[in-house]
Length: 80
Image (cartoon, rainbow, N blue to C red; front, top):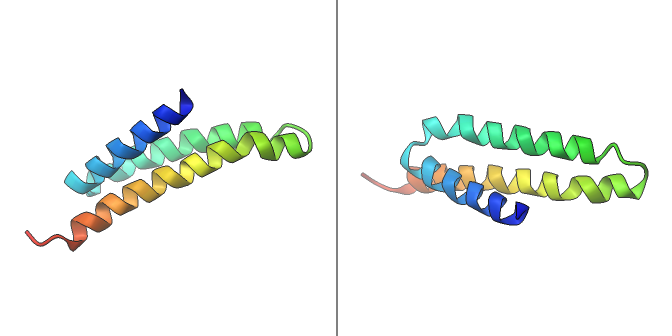
């Protein structure tokens, strides 16, 4: 279920960044902040389990950031 949510957030952010590049930064930062909190909470587990639990959140945060920047980059390359 979390995978579907992250994919949905990436798609929504990419479309929002393409249509409204300046207004897409706040939702992107909010999504990355929420995923960062999950990563920090997961990393508090002892030993290798902490790395294992925090990795999905950190990679999801990275994916959200990349999709937002890709939408803004695509918008920048279009000529209107």
